[in-house]
Amino acid sequence: MAEAIHFDGQVAIVTGAGVGLGRSHALQLAGRGAKVVVNDPGVATDGEAREINVAHTVAAAIVANGGEAIAHRADVSSADDVADMVEQTMENWGRIDIVVNNAGILRDKTFGKMRMDDFRKVVDVHLIGSANVTHACWPIMRKQKYGRVLLTSSSSGLYGNFGQSNYGAAKAAMIGLMNVLAQEGARDDIRVNTLAPTAATRMTEELLPDDALALLAPETISPGVLYLVSKHAPTRFIMGAGAGCYAQTRIYETPGVVLVGEENTPEAVAAAFADIQSPDNQQPMPDAFSQTLKFARNAARARGLELSWDKK
Image (cartoon, rainbow, N blue to C red; front, side, top):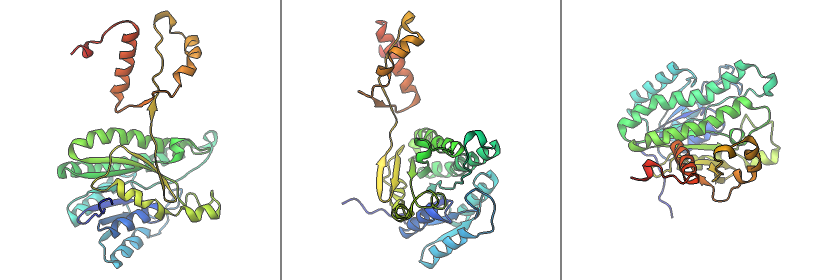
């Protein structure tokens, strides 16, 4: 039996926590002992402002259940708003252990018909917003020698979805951000993971039939979130989640081929394409330099050479 997961004495910021997935994450973190900053500006799914105080409603529910919570209506795409939220968090509790980047909006349209303002706004909220919140908390976590950061991606970013070029681009960017932050945070025990959820929320209620919506409640995903921000969490893990189902998404690179000298032509690439994409013996790349090293070694080997760094 796994060790019980709890967050007593820890402080968590959850963005977009007024409704849907964020609300579920915040409530479940509080239920396990975390002090929670419930962040939500109270806007519609397209990001347009509405005077809906959903953050305070969720925070009040946590307090009514015996927990500790404060609400903040920061727009995560605003660095000034985020700085104020982090400052208030530190004034209240003096530390930040967990950041769950969940806030997001949709402005769907095919790429040819999309206004670039709508493209930028979606990227600003999802990607820049996640970077803003994480960046503001990063020095605090480094000083503590402890931190857990969760980014939220999507199958639209991992695999694509018609009419969501802005959303898909922002969500795919989470993987690149995670890969770097997981490396940079390792020495200070800051672990960074990514969630790719499928849930019945405001964003999906018009896309899914009622029987699927019943299975895909946000509450079925939050247990995976709690594990990914827990003391014994992994790092650099992409978790697909929905309806109580969990999976790992992995990025691999095939061994590929080596084309030398005059053999290195477009026609040769076309002729070798089946071998280039063959998954046999594919491997994950731990960092960007690993690919450089792989290609250099393969090229040297094909020429009967030994690289200087392999002679050490």
